[in-house]
Amino acid sequence: MLTVVPREIRENAARAKGYLRREEIVRAMENMALALRGYSGLQFARAARFEMEVNFSEFLQELCRHPTMRSLLDVNGTGNPRAINYQRGKEAILAAVFEGLIKIMHQAEEEKERQQKENNEARLKELIATGLASIESGEHAKGRAFLKRAASEFGEDYNVLMDIGQKFISVECHLEAAEVFEMAMERDPKRPEGYSAAIDAYECINEMEKAEAVYKKILRQFGGHAKTYGRMALMYLTWHKRMKAEEFANRALQIDREEESALQVYERLNLRR
Image 1 (cartoon, rainbow, N blue to C red):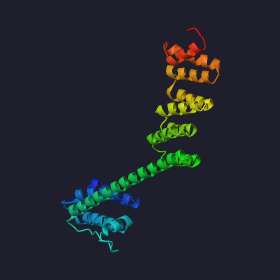
Image 2: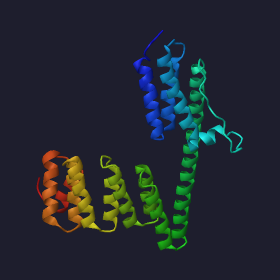
Image 3: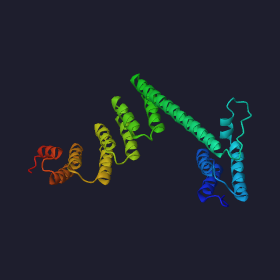
Image 4: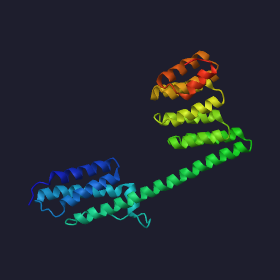
């Protein structure tokens, strides 16, 4: 017969009560189930048994008062939820009850997340469809507003931002597309697609200063590469900045003597390699 409750059982029970105070119901029940299973089948002296039985009873009383549990235990919606009481010798059964409730709560959370995902997908689809239809019917401001709202509401997802940017491109809203691509860059700075797409969009409407700013972000994030320098050289040439075009073409060819964009700049400037 044990005179002291094993440390692991006491710690699991204490953690359960702590989680319950913080309203982390699932973790509270998980830890109390561990405590109950550890306690089950052991023989304790009266004082040790009394200590744990008080802990179990107090936990159950507090747990059953919680709104989440009241709803869960009121299966028929009577407003009078079932009580869970501690019974000596039935600790394993009580642990199984907790484990069953935990499973139900996990399933409910998964269903909630699935429904939320479906709702989000429907909302995104509706915003994009309405935006594109408005632009195609001549309501450009309204259409752009819907697409921007989609980017704002779902801007946590890099791929969604890239898709919305391409939708803007499809209706020749290059400035708005570039702005959304820059949002994607900020969302995930290590993915290069957003940078390239933003530059293409800016260059398409001759926003060279903005394109240059994106190139500088590329250099800071990824370092200087021959292809980047070559594309910058072409940009500066289009921008009628001959000296800059020559400078960056030289940088590209110092790294790769066959860099295609840099060679185009040399040819158009009638430079010798």
